[in-house]
Image (cartoon, rainbow, N blue to C red; front, side, top):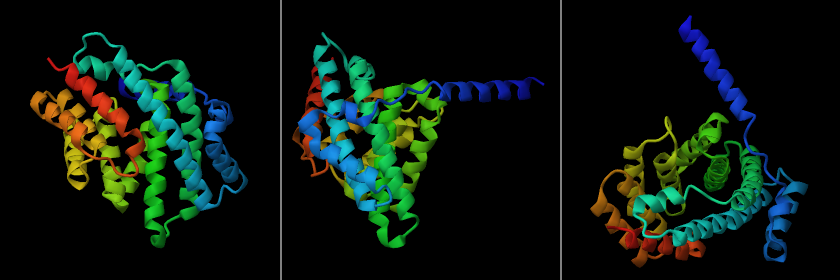
Length: 273
């Protein structure tokens, strides 16, 4: 009887935890006025025609473009505030963000995931629109990752975000792992490096991120690979990747946040004993 009883208890705990996921603030409350007016217009257009693939993709892109710099700037601010850290302390500090940042990102990413899912629903399995399907799956996984980050690892795992993220990543990877400079590889590698047990897989994360670097040696790829190598105990390998962040060039997709990635690498290198 112990086995079935325990399985029921675990199932009930997951149901209860799912109900404890943070409620996202309305997206219009977290958009930054005139600075993000274009994003607001994209969201409004999507709301008026949720079955329009182009409008849904435009909205999910705009919302990610608003959420991502928010996260990257906050990570840099946290790192800058540390006194005499080591890289492990820098990486640990990045998991602790102020509530105001989490709320903003949660509002943006929840609507971003909604728009990405609407695009996927409208696209179906159309083989002529593969790139758009990859795009929508990547953005769905990105936004859900932000939602999970805002909720925290255990709440997110028990609320089922992990399975939704991995499903979107798997679809993107199956369609084209090297799309947009290896974005599906980067996304999957980073997720597996940071996800809690039982989703984490550091060995596979290293393989995927090495492949992403080979496809496109971008600052973000070197940063993520350096982080997981450090966590895996490869000090020299991590330092080499973080140094590469400072000299490599971003692509159009990652250019806006490349300065943040370089500062993160500097913090890690400056904290290396």
